[in-house]
Image (tube, rainbow, N blue to C red):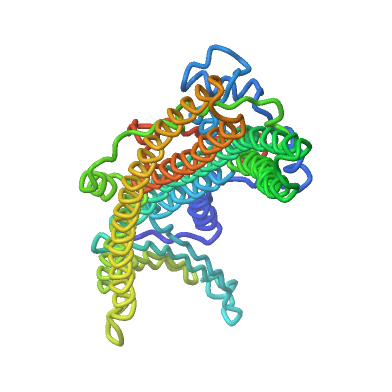
Length: 481
């Protein structure tokens, strides 16, 4: 027989039971204000000679000399990995996804209820029976059919996708740095060649003016020679404008203010190397298997699979155990309740249909991504092969023009022709040099398209490990504890 217990003795037990359920490891809020002015100040303070950037570069490429005398594509890419905010966004998304994994693995908390009452009709002093009524009950939810496992699997797939998205974001950063550096190279080389052409044209005009003064040519011929000279002068100004634009574009791609590039010298050696055209089939296979966004899309499809499995298991109801105790006017009463949802009116068919649709959507997105990649590869490899042929033709023509110009110069030295003919031959060489530069830049653009299709540099090194975990500004302002 269960002994009777007075409510005065039972109350501490109930309070102790409630105390066991009180959270013991609660997280606390830490205010981290975000200031637009503060972020702007931090951005304006970014330079390419900071000590923390030096440590980062030395850790990855062993930069012995500091500050660097010249900045190559690799150096600028690493600086962009260090500074660019898009990587901070991708890292923050990964932290969110990891939090979702923790959430998915959490088990539902039990709940406790406590309902005291008093029977005012009972006269305790007469009957000897307590007028107090105290009801307590626990509710212990129990998930069934492996729902927690499917929920964890879904969150882990999404976490994998978020991790791979960091690599994809890093490649986009590298691609933008390469494009900006290529634009700067093209603008600088164009200006140099145009200045050479301008000097030849100016000398040509000077010689014609001398002939005009001697009465050998008309003013019209001099005017006709000035037209291309004036056009070249305008093209020089345009090339200088493109240089300024490319510098601004490069600063943005690295994630630093434009003034951070003042006085910085750039090396284009790694940029302008052009390997032979790779087989399209090999490029296609490598891209379709190894690209970060392809693997992320596969992870998202895996998440949709787990989500569908989770919705299917929700057809099986969870169980709630409800042990309870009641002190009812000096009587101890114990109970054990079991509750579950009856799948009578619906069997979760709507959520299952939605999950099936999302799985089909994830599969379609993956197929569309692969088709887009195949198109990129076919186009980029074709463009690169055609650009290499065009460049080779321009080089062959350049050799012929140089030989012709040299022969013309020898004829002038022998007194057989006028110097104007030498200037005309030099002008042909200069014009071809501009055409050759255009062909070279086109080929480098096509090579960049192949790299973007592969999401790997042309020599295919494994560069993903070069991505820093956090930028300095992020550590200081957002993620510090």
